[in-house]
Image (tube, rainbow, N blue to C red; front, top):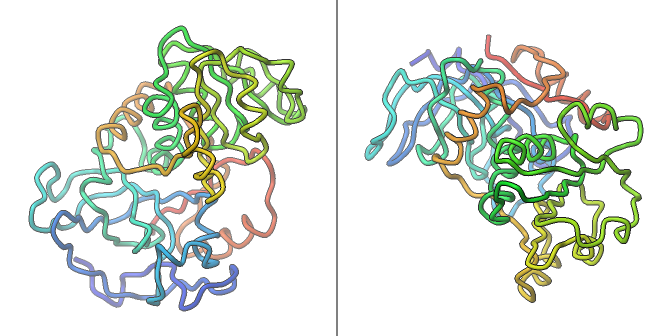
Length: 316
């Protein structure tokens, strides 16, 4: 293990805006039962990371500081805790650092074995790190909760966002046809991704009435009442942006699922296999070393742009 003085991560000592982020030395913990200590090679920003740092999920993340930042990562296993059976020291892995601990934006971090899968040899660390959260959410929405089958039809809101792009590619890989919503200026990009029919965010649901086996809401722009108009008989709406009100509505109908994405190493392995085949990719807008990451994260948050690719942090 590296000397403590050389082990660094981006962390914060209170909830708040981007100004609370610091690149600081820290002492990496010893992995507990079922855990891995991973030397991070690359980590990717997700939209949820800023909200977690701002304190929007305090019920999950608690009040202990300093807290690490970041969840999606790829790297090499440095040590294993008791009870680890699938993964060994030296293995290249892709995974998700837990909400409670986070810490992907650092040189070493703890990841549960159940939140990891082996990195395929043909996939770079940077490419692999972009996938766990967005592709995991898309896979569970379509395949697990949507029960998607070959020959069926899918509608994906925000089809050029990270979850939306993942969903389009997963649906196509499973033999489904895809319609998606996107900005008018990005319609050609969506078609190039494989979206058969591209509509604007303001499309009238009645224009698409009764056409889809699964409607995946990943944009925050489509209500359940509008989405259900678009369903075929027996179809299902899966929403990956949970709120308490949505959970209440979902309890009242089998046609609507509000998804809290769960770790599943077998699903992650299938996602990574698709990526290794070149059938699932998320664009990377920018790759920065850890030394420059606080500035890059701040800029990404303060100057958002629709459809931008992933920000990936690499360790020096």
